[in-house]
Amino acid sequence: KHRSQIRRFITLIDTLYDNRVRVVIAADSEPKDLFYLDDVKDGYGDADRALMDDLKITKDSEDAKAAIFTGEEEMFACDRCHSRIMEMQTDEYWEKWGN
Image (cartoon, rainbow, N blue to C red; front, top):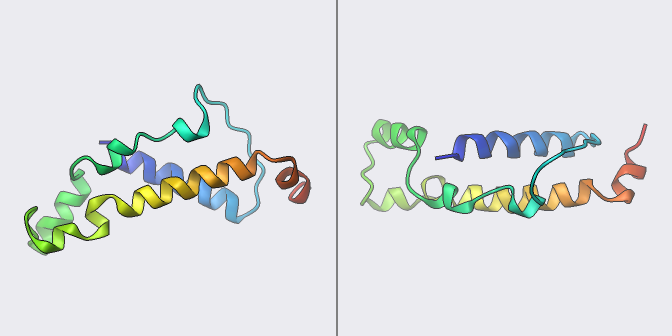
């Protein structure tokens, strides 16, 4: 449902982190609550279904259990994103990458 938006947000955080950018984020929730991992795990998104169709993979096949379709990659990326956001809030990060 929200996998595409989650992937884009994670890519943004990864890019900011990799380029040592200091960023201020205002949110109504804590970083740990930014993602609903059920959105990642529950079912196939449109892009997944299109890829499966192109590759002639059925949802019951062994190939459908690949990490790209199960949400395992996104769950790992969500954890990494949360960790990076937490680090990016620290005084040490801000002092290290200031200016």
